Amino acid sequence: MRMFRFTSNPGMLFVLPAVLAIACVMIFPLIYTFVLGFNKSDLYTDAWQFVGFAQYADLFRNAEFLASIGHTFVWTVSSVTFQFAVGFMAAVLINQDFIKMKWLIRICLMVPWVLPSVISVNIWKWLYHPDFGYINYLLKTLGIASAPINWVADERYAMLSAVIVNVWKMFPLVMLMIEASLQSVPNELKDAAKVDGATGIREFFTVTVPHVASTSYTIVLLLIIWTLNAFTFIFVLTGGGPANSTQVLSMFIYKAAFQNYNFGVAGAASVVLFIITALLSVIYMKYVMRGGEKG
Image (cartoon, rainbow, N blue to C red; front, side, top):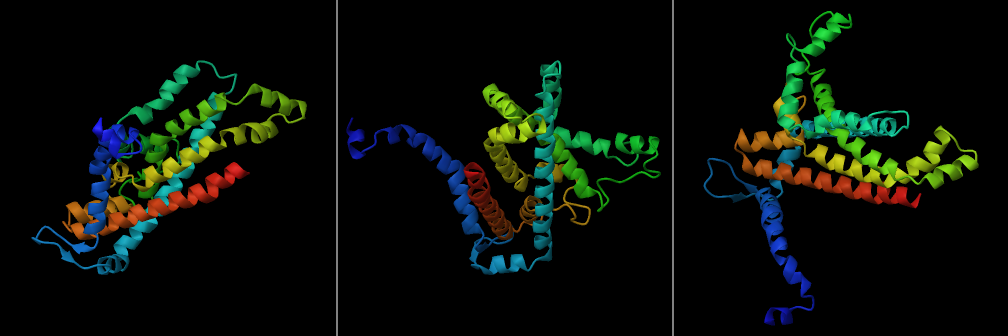
């Protein structure tokens, strides 16, 4: 009982093991990465060499790194926009009364999200194959394309191909969350809107959309964070190519650390990715989520 006398909040002692576990698993690697970003470290150097912000200055003079930031922006905006749009429309459609066997439709649509990412991407990699892929076969059969398209190895289509895989993989989660929110819309509000003359589209935007807004804001925030840090889709599908056209920041960090063995540069790039993710999250929560709640 003496342990409880040293703190004004004895409950903290019960959560202390969990806090220590989180500190070891998350906080320590984060601090380690921040420190590593200020030091020069590679496979051939025995000791770290402190270089300060010079490593970050060199990083922002690196054309490949700057290009990866641009690719990350395109990748994130495109993926999140279509993930949410497709998931939202699917949820609204399934929520309609005339749709039968909803349980079966939900199970079928949830398959992409349930499948492991590596398996999902490899399935799409086969579908994208220029000679044996079903997508080129279908386009040729319909007369849309006369010659096979190298979806993964062509700079014009590589990023689009990766975005399609990411959207296909993640939209079921959006659908599930939005549909659950749609089902919680009180019928009294819908009836009151109908009494006031709001029917159809007007009822949807004046009653349903505001009710699911908070869920939508949260989903979009999670999608932004996950997509900014996504690695598996790009790594398995394109490897960052062709000619680094799909190399996002996570791929740049991987190559710097495990192909070039430049751990200091990888640490600095990781810090930049962390700061970008944190800033976007804070800005989104402050100006979008809070603004939507006030509205």
